[in-house]
Amino acid sequence: MGKNNENDEKNKKENKDSKFTIFKKWLKRNLTWVYFTVALIFLLFPNTTFTPFSPVWNKLIEKIGFVALTSGVFASVLKSIQFTGLFKEELSKIISGSEFLHNRKDLPDIWKKISKIIYYEKFPEISELLENRILTTYFPTDTNHYNEDLVVSIVIHKITDEFVINYTQTIEYNAILDCEDNESYVKYTDTITDDKDVTEKNELISFKVDGVEKKKDKIRDIKKGDGKIKYVHKVPIKGEKGKKKFKIYQKVKNTYSLRGENAKLLRFNTITKNVDLTVSHKKDVEVSFFNIGLVNEFVPVHTDIKNTLSRRHRDDIILPRQGFGLSFYKR
Image (cartoon, rainbow, N blue to C red; front, top):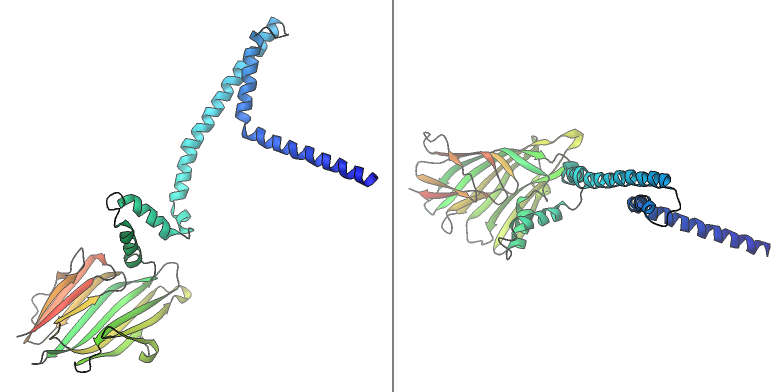
């Protein structure tokens, strides 16, 4: 019995504590209104017939209520201004600040919501396709580096009477790693037909990273389909000891027929800044240049050099799937 009494007393005490805690929380949430109500009572009660106090005490209580009411209202207004003004401004700075965004794991979703606000009212039917295309193709979400100072050199050795072209292509550039990620891949892709009756050859002569030659059988992946053979060369680059810049060198020798299509297309698979192109050819070959999907186009340079075509791209970037093309003619 004694133990049960102790438990009952303990439960009663806990219930009292619980109720008191709830009351304190309620009081804290509604302190402004409680303060306002008490001040209003102090202000109005002395002027009623129910007051038991003398006129002197009634006047004093009324003054206390007036002071309490005005100070309470002022505190409430000040609190509201601070929250909607200063606090709102500071909160806005935090939310839109780069440090806050940097720690977010849902940036693609945030970008979609922002972009939808920007153009949804104009193109509601295609807004989802548009935002997905921009995000997956043009934003560097899947690539941890960009290319810089890319130099393309193409030497056309000959175009035969059967309209078969033979040329050597060299590409040199700097791969710049993401400031935060320490690993990426540099790729080179070439495609030829799988028709054995058509003369077409692609030969990777050299693939170097910082002057170190990579073994072709270690970096090549061959894919077949739709009448094509695709050679994908992929080499990892790692930013060990803070290294962020890598010198890439590729050299290929190609032979194929121009009868089906007399154009060569070079589209970049990574965001690229600063590109120089030089094409040298024989006197009996004519080469034309055209841009692919660029806002700011390549400009001609070294136009006074014979049997040479030169173009330069500056003060802008080239996005994935953009680039240039060359068409060939035999005089």
